[in-house]
Length: 228
Image (cartoon, helix red, strand yellow):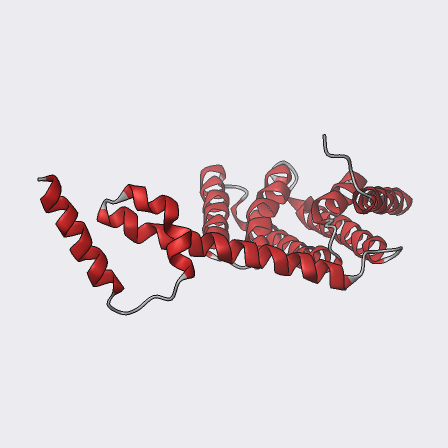
């Protein structure tokens, strides 16, 4: 059984403190749904301060984009339920497609915009005049959670950044080693000699020459003729 480390306990306490602070601010300012601010803290929090800030910024941008889309699309199309449903589905599908297509951290913006718009637009069908207030309140609650998570996450005692860099470097080296081993095994599998795949790492340690693939193909051809 792996027990939580001191860093894990510190991260848990700081996240809980940020969530309670966001909830208190939401209740103090009488926001309609203060639990959104508390949930935002747990969503954007990360043991690394830089990751928390990056995700918080992208979440804020995605929320603003989705809220703006709801404010623009609800009033003119709310009287046509079928057309409005198609528009909401098109918006959601398009944003999710952009989120899946974008391999960078910016994809979080499109994902947030994809589900923020229907969350605001669909409850406003019965009261279209309140869509603007609902969009503003959700945006404020999300921003409150983001600000609390960023401030509390940056405060207190944290592990030196040098140790984080060393761990990140070790993970990068480990991933490169795994990719190198996979690339070393692949040519032997293509040639059909599976027994040599087990010793591919040893072959990968020695220097390679331009003529080696040709020798491997000729060796495989000789083994095939011998078996025939």
